[in-house]
Image 1 (tube, rainbow, N blue to C red):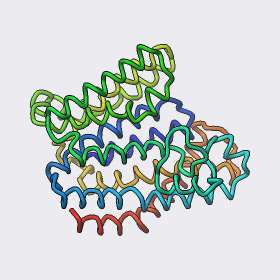
Image 2: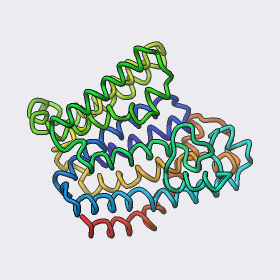
Image 3: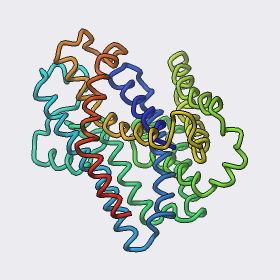
Length: 329
């Protein structure tokens, strides 16, 4: 039951980029990384297996999950860039634009992008590049055993400690593939210790507790706005919050309106929202929005268009692709 959780994470990224909630997106991106570490380790063990055939089916499935929707989002973004004045794009999403050289197009279309790559069609595409890297690492057994996953976690934690002790730039603490290693390894550890965590944290299995824990993500962000000096400790503490949220959702039963069907439906919106929220914000300003800077008002005005385009992408592409992906599981 991770669909609603994924959609909330995607909305947190959108709130950060077009809603002016600076810093909130970083909490969400590391949450995506923790969840991916858990899910990819889970499906390699329980669905595909670490054989040549299993790895091949896994890689094909991940390709179909990531690239077709991403390429469609690139078309949406290219249309937004062409339709809007360059001043609008520069004001809202500096660095987003049409690639200039052939190499830039290849990088964008193949998703070989990092935080310093410019111009980019999809503003937060660097995180997808890191996701792909760890998808491959997990396929080739980095989280196959408890011991290997523990070593991976220790290395990720050691890197985080070193860059913070040395006071290195934020790009080393957040945008780097080494920085992403920590949340991915944490997610993989959840898989290996799932039974123990579910038993010892059984108190999480109630909706009020789940809601309270999820609210801590936003409480942490508000505290970081009040006391910017403690942003980084709060940022890393969110890894624990994401662990608690994921553990609370592992065995969550269907209740009331939140059936597995509805949860899956909500989750389907997470990827397109993540991909196109910035182009939609640019389009909203180009169409005459009175809000020309990232702000709550721009997010509210952009949301109907964001939901509509996302729904269209799901109906026209994601649903047919999902039916194809099921044949390779």
